[in-house]
Length: 111
Image 1 (cartoon, rainbow, N blue to C red):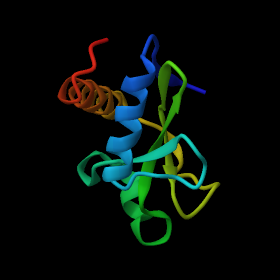
Image 2 (cartoon, rainbow, N blue to C red):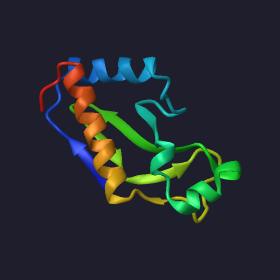
Image 3 (cartoon, one colour):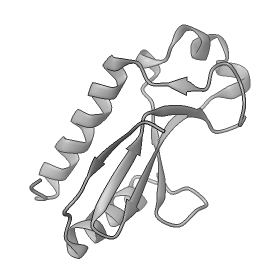
């Protein structure tokens, strides 16, 4: 699995992240897992075609003691297997990594 990982986070920093993702209502049914929505404008052509049957599209972010890990796979919240479930484009990867870094900065977490 392709992931983007940030290590060396302090416990209080992880807690601030958890609190923010709860505020944003990004919680998954699995503890410490969060669904980050993919912007509509950054969906692939097939994801746009599958909007009615497979949306919403998300990327999984896991917060573990001392680290966070963002999967680079764009998932459907309604189907496990479909042609529209595939790795993020380079542009989407950059967008999501930038989003994470801006969120960390906003929470006064320096990595």
